[in-house]
Image (cartoon, rainbow, N blue to C red; front, side, top):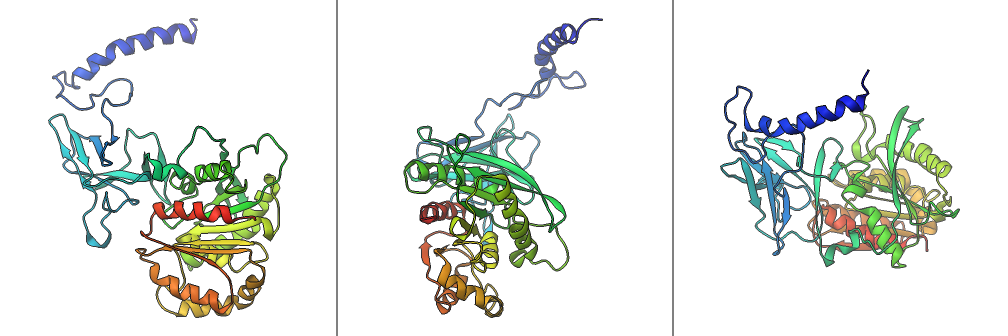
Amino acid sequence: MPSFATVARPLALLCLASAPALAQTAANGAPRKPSCNPPGFFTAPATYKSVEPLPDGRVTFRLCAPEANTVAVTSSDNAAAIPFGMGGGPVGVPLTKDSLGLWTGTTAVAVEPGTYRYDFRVDGARVPDPQATRFSHERVGTNSVFEVLGPAGAFQAYDKSVPHGAVSMVEYWSSTLDAKRRAYVYTPPGYMKNATRYPVLYLVHGAGDSDDSWTSEGHANYILDNLIAAGKAKPMIVVMPFGHTPDRPGVDMLTNTDFGDDLLKDVIPYTEGTFRTLNGPATRAMAGLSMGGAHTLNFGLTHPDRFGYVGVFSMGLGLQDTTQVRSYETKNAAALDRGAREFKLVYYAIGKDDFLYRTAAPTRALLDRHKIKYVYHESGGGHTWTNWRDYLADFAPRLFK
């Protein structure tokens, strides 16, 4: 009997020889219409660039979709250049189709250096870029990712001249949720080569994100690499858990005690039993953005016995009315008073254009009433990863001093 290799090689050569012919004719033998992406037997990168930063800072997007009627590119991260339709405004940058079915569109304004999620809206359907090689998972669904390089974004970009840590995806069994769970873990440069124990930052994503968002979109690993290399931050482990828990009646996303139980009873013990960690409040920190900021208010700020450092990004109390603030304060008064004595750092950051900005004043007033000293960072901009990367870059150097 001939070997698999003996049979497979001629078959592969036959397929390669046949691919151009297959690409030229339709199934009924008629000539195939000219297309921007002729079908072939083997998949290969397209001849066009699906994302092309231009010298003036604008970005051109392309998608081959000959049968589509309308195409636009959207991004939840850059409303100035790529509108997302918030408040009833336009959705995305419209693309126009040429005779080969290639859709093209260019942002009207420059895109600032940084990392951005994007997708195409094809006849109303959300479609990741089929030519993309980088992706970011949300709570549900997936976006493509592009990066605009430049000095302003260097702090969050890969730098070949500095040592780099590793990002691992880990799975663990949550006894509190009776479910398999997942987290991403950053270990600093040198972790694999030494026996050193490290402090830990537990870093939580927002409501629309997943456990991979702080690395795929937030570039937390590159931010830490660059800060550590510059001597601005201490080497640390960063654990990025999944901020959502299995749905069940009565669970509120922003006051999710299921997440708090999983964090305190499963994630922390798993981390400290698996990685070389320094354990105790003086070497533990918790921070989060948006929903992750709510988790930090509920399970970090109220646990000075667990965390010595707390960071809240783009979130506050009293979104609807003052009832939430009074309820939170009544429930957690003793822990807040203890935190005033024991916290080494409480950090609070929000943008002036953030739709949650109105929650900053009642949250700060609460901290003041309980004499909790805190660093307040009020920036420009809104509820975006551009701000959250900046906040992490400002917060991390303050940890574990």
